Amino acid sequence: MPTKEMPNARGHVYLCSKSIETMIDEHSFEYEILEEEDGSTQSVESIPWRGLADELAELHYLHGAQFIRQLKLIIEYGEFHLVAGETDIFSTGGENSEDYPNLLNAAQKAVEHGYRVYILPNPKGFRTADFIFERKGVYKMFDLKTIIGRNSIDNRLSESIGQTNRVLLNMAVEYTPSALARSIKHFFESNPQAIEVLVFKGKKQLSVTRKSLEDNRFFQTFIRRYTK
Image (cartoon, rainbow, N blue to C red):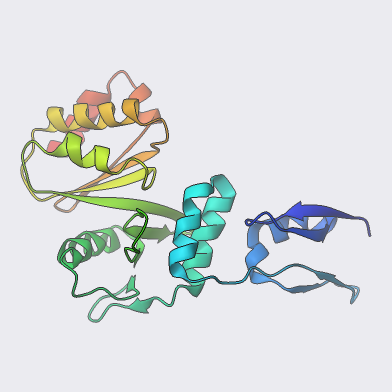
């Protein structure tokens, strides 16, 4: 069977038969030897685990499918444990950190909306996001901003630039919905890499994507959803 060279998420090259190319591309870090129905095998280079900090740092250089594969790798090998007293919230430690109550509060709300939540550590030397969310096989990474001040949205959103392209705003204060919508719109305009701003307000969840802003009725729709 003919083979072709395929790069994996770290720039390494392995041989892949065309008939199983798609499967290997989606799960390359999970396999070392692939056995086909006729008994023949194909060797695939396994990806060594380099430690959680290094794997988190690599996310800054990945995009698209490679980025998602890296999130799965981190979840699989990051030694997460279920947080005591919680369901579907996992952590690697840090429960005594100053930010942990805010992280746990946002994670609990995310679980109510059907997500499985992985609270990420904060390694020294580089900036990283706070969460990996998984729901129905879809993986996303979010930077958390807990909003406790009435005029802090713009500054808090700008802090996320360079950490991840998705931001979670956990609203812990009453906020004018029109002002919030303007701040979110400005964030997308000033950050070409931004994909989503997720807003938690009480029991409500609002997702704003770049496509949302193309709607001429964005402000009216956002305000209605935020206030109802």
